[in-house]
Length: 404
Image (cartoon, rainbow, N blue to C red; front, side):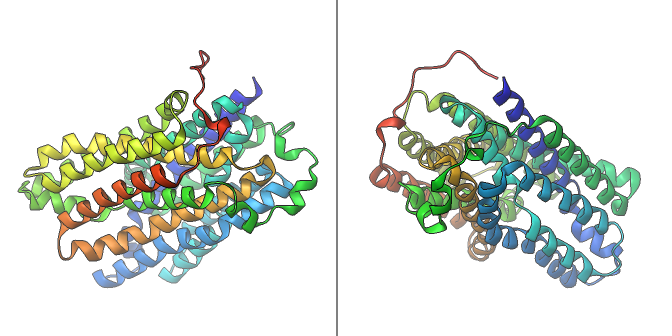
């Protein structure tokens, strides 16, 4: 079936793209050292600016690219983004000064946006009762890619050198473009049909869709909470008495468990939404996630974190996919590019703000970071239960027997 082929294409492209991106980005501080930056403070400054500028530009421009995708097609917009990554990543291999890295990262943010558009394409291609499954499938790939990328990137950098690793990353994006170009069939997609309503769709009208602003806030909150662990988890593991030599491996295991549990949550959300409304799925999983975060707050040793981590990761995965699916259900096909672009803005804003705010909180108390996560997840559960409207068409459906 066409929708299965399309789903495979956008999932494979997302996985390849997200893996390629994290092939080199975690090692950016080392690259600045190779460029002649020796002061630790300067390395941290250039790394922070370079890592932050791309999501900042992407957050601002995702709705714009989504709007163009609504008008001219999703496929061409994804190809545009992926091709730009080929040239930018290849150019990274030839830079000679730190400011050139920053400039290229800013340019990358300007042309990015394929992540939200692949979600749109998955939602467009799938039958209505498979929308959650399709969105969750792509989100699983987008989560697993960054989990695998740094491991592969470390091996690649060891073999060919860090500078040439950027060329390998460019090759990943070539593969992603080829997959989308030859495998994704946009003919017959709902947004390609003539529609007088297309001209009337504006950013304001998208925000006015039922539950949309609430769901955009949910996506922001879940991303903010999910990303709070990165800056403080190794420090917390050490604070709990783990020997210094074992901190990296324990942190790596916990990060991997979080990624794997989140991927499972994305994947099973479709099945859950056949038995429960999106409101119930988001509220319940957020409340369960609060239990996982609370375990972090009360933990007396690093071993207890192994219990809280999969609970937290699974809950975040389910709630995120349910939020995107619920938002997709209230968008007309002709506005999905714009809508998913706005959701991406909320997600990227959470990604950008979380390390900064939680870093300041952790300066006083690391446990306070996880306490904030607990209260925030309970707030998400409460707000969704109280404010989210359940439309008649959103009622859970009988389990489908056919899976990908």
